[in-house]
Image (tube, rainbow, N blue to C red; front, side, top):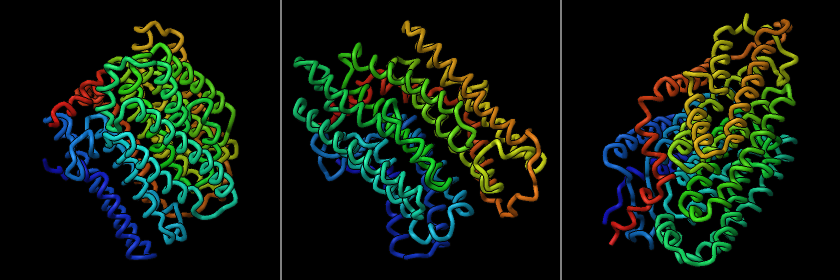
Length: 497
């Protein structure tokens, strides 16, 4: 039994990059170079993984010379490598974006180090085959995020950072509690082994329902699911834009992934309770996110509430737990990671240039930045799911699944949310770019080449993802199978002697 190094690269590259930056001290330029190179290496290694997994199937690596279920395993199925690839692209472009936006003081105090450690935890959570090590990787990226949300020490960062830390510590304690309950029932922490044991479970379903509620509480808190999203708008609003990009595009999606993975592997025997509860909370989340998106004129808050809407839409697909539902959930998950990063980058550029977050105080910027206006318009259409852009395919499969499963209200809510999303972002676009002209002499004469490069590149990635959706279908079909057919994920455990 040997350890395959390839599945370890998405974890090792950012981890050792962070260690190297710590050793070289407060040298921002060197940190920039190392972080950018690390982002490129992550992209290359993740693309390599996609090719390997597509050709040869799920890759499993056993650590410490102990085979599963006794040792720690990393399981690179197609879902994991697609998420890791998307994370790598966002990481690289957001690092470039940070060069002109985060500020030299934050760079001196190990901003890029914390980013690399956060990506280590995120990639580990996506790829681990061990539920306890999912907890460990959650703590890795959360510890880095605690530093990032307070880095700079502004009043709003400290206020919201304290709330963010307290909420996540409470959720982490419940995570340990859920692990203890699950281990007491199954005697294992390997997710594939747990799934196999629970497939023949003849004990009380009440204990499994309790465990499902505990896990849902934990991951719903991380993902921003109703009613546990109360901390998210304020906490995400507080840090500088590059940190908000990482948080909005990546952190909530780890919670969504964890719900999908655990609910597909552990809680399939009582879906009338567990998955119907998840569906109900997802629909309420969509409604509350829509209310928030319509209630503000602040550019950051509008996009932040659109994060909450997207979480609900994805989890509607997860709650269906069939092929169409999971295909839609995965398409929409990847789409939302990309498009939220793109929109936050564009909004960040507008704030950087104007010094304003309130759209009502802006207007006529199409004359100053016509290409940015076009990019914002395209990103807004993609966010709303206008075909053939990236948001369309995920919603199509999710709505199809909802109607096929008799969940007509869920399908209608998802469709109606598209109109709300379209209105909220198009209203923002019209105010900022076509409204009454603001005083252009107040615009800041700042360098923005790297900001615009990253922003436009991210929009182009979104466009390419939408146009290539048909070509990428075999990859997403493979990725969805490990959820709606959990035996395809857990079959590697039977090959271990």
